[in-house]
Image 1 (cartoon, helix red, strand yellow):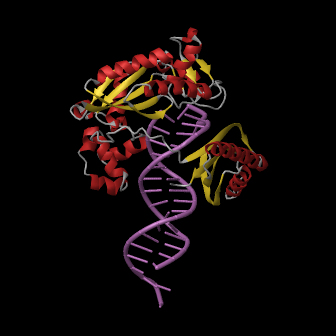
Image 2 (tube, rainbow, N blue to C red):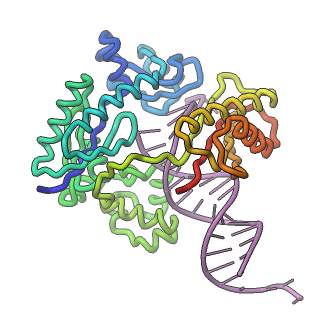
Image 3 (cartoon, rainbow, N blue to C red):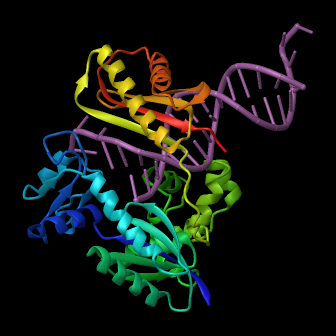
Length: 342
DNA sequence: TCTGGGGTCCTAGGACCC
DNA sequence: TCTGGGGTCCTAGGACCC
């Protein structure tokens, strides 16, 4: 039997979950995100396929989404509920004997399996998830995680697609480098500047040259991406978080520095609550400030000694906040705690 | 198009030490 | 006098992903 990687990805997850709760929304443009109010600050978390037909995309400001699709139903993000539904999906995957499951987010996971018929396994997974949650998913099948992940896009919605070394060049060669998992708009532009536009061109590039151009690790890694090369085994060991954070965008900018201090202390206490639950002390604290309109800065400091104590964490966050001298209006504040490495 | 919230990893410069 | 070279840690910012 051969080892296969399946990438399981729920279709329009947040919108689908909301449509389950309100079946009358089926087929309608549904936009989930922020407070569900397109006149307020917030962005689209997930748009239903009907909304996408109007050009609504994830990450788009709700205000823009409302302009593009005035008939859309706007719903607030109910993260607690999505987390619970996601847990049902992941439990369904873990219910398969001999599958290794690596969760990548609320709505996606890699599955590793020994099988000679990965398509049959994909169908079983889709049926099991549908039976347990009434949600549909798409499955990418690959000989490594990168190819499985990319394959999923060709299977959406509710389908499947297989992508391996054998057909990588045929399927991906002519596509822009942006289609690769790990290459965003900025990197795609840098590659284009250097004469690398397609996946095939990137695959043929000299790793040492790209190392000199774009960094000792990233340069050669991009070439590997172009060749479709990546990790081959799905890891079942639970992920150990490196940090915990909370941040808030204010509906009205904060203009009083006393209010800024109060909010930073409150965020630090929320973070302290999280890390106390996990019983892992923080070794560093970072404070993020986004001044209006949108310039963002981060300052951080290593603590004298690791702690989970809310008072000490709040005091440390306020000390870091003191490193900021500007008193311009504040749009966003964030506090992040980093755990000690190893 | 006036741009959320929660994360990870890489890069590069400066400090500091030998 | 004003100059080495390597290694590691700290910090800020950038890029990407869900």
